[in-house]
Length: 381
Image (tube, rainbow, N blue to C red; front, side):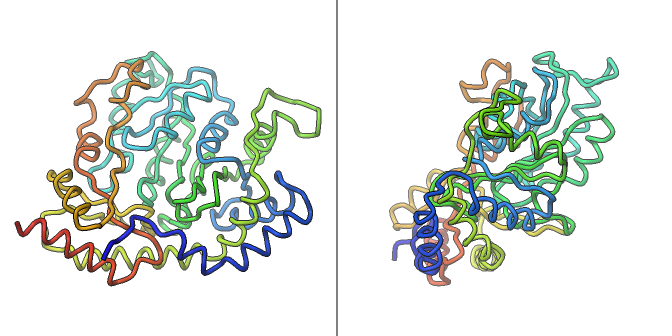
């Protein structure tokens, strides 16, 4: 039995009639960019994220860029970010005219470590304000990433941000409908960014993203910046960008948002099943920290024999993934920052040993048994 890494077709077949009706309405109205379908989705998603405002945009990368751009920080400000994330996290910082400042993560959660952030800030604040020793950028913000679907230690990072006078941003691109201490992902700090790439827990039929915030000022600036800096047609307050969401994606996401909680519940059930099936093996399994609703965008395991295990799974027709095989501080694109291999051992350990197993709401018990048997077969050799 072959097991895919992700199955979008089964999900589509369950909601295809609803999707078809919504898309037909877009075609009938010929309102293809923004419009009522996107506005309706923004309202629904603000409720999911627990915020006053949601601004739908064209991608998760656009969302990261926009929330930082809209914060109106002094150009060249340093923003702390973990190295073990997709490039869009750091890319959005650079696109907004700022400097990524990497700090390592906690080994249990693989999210930004509050202890390491605080220690770093203390070490570089001798002048009274935190300054990145590598680039000379004054640190003005923290961008925490909710890796794999588990919200970062955002309450602790909020306290650190307040102590040092920093802005806190949340990259919630992998954590739709997750929560920490009862607060939804997307409701922490200055603003949060979401991605609706097709493979995400809440996926569009193409690219899509959103910024959530409780700040009226940030929300207004994001809305303006996503549409060429225009709050009214042909009147431009700022130099902006074309980051508008298409009406088709708004329609699709409007339908799917009604199902996200139950889909994530099924992911959590699948994660619990993996935990039972894979216990006792020399394989590190994901751990939930404290009062957290982890939504398992990815089911990330770790083993020093990652490459051999992945090869074996492929031979058994079981798909798997690597997220992410090279931490950002070792990538050519960020070499100008002056980091080197060995600077962030936990992020490097994650990149060298992580293996993500098939995970999607409709994964069956039989499919998970197949995955587990293949993993057990490898370790029994």
